Image (cartoon, rainbow, N blue to C red; front, side, top):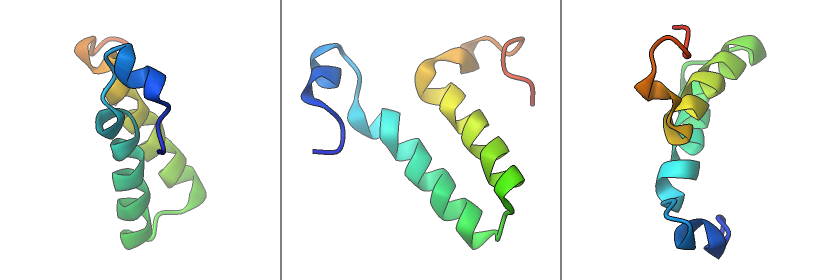
Length: 61
């Protein structure tokens, strides 16, 4: 199991938490992003499962 069972008990869906990183990794590879671009993409993606997307002031796009 990729995500610890405790995350589900706490109400976190593993696919939502980890799936976004796999998707960004695959997209970064397909788009041939450099390390800096991939880092930025992962940073924006990290804001989704953490809930900060609800506050546009926090996530600078």
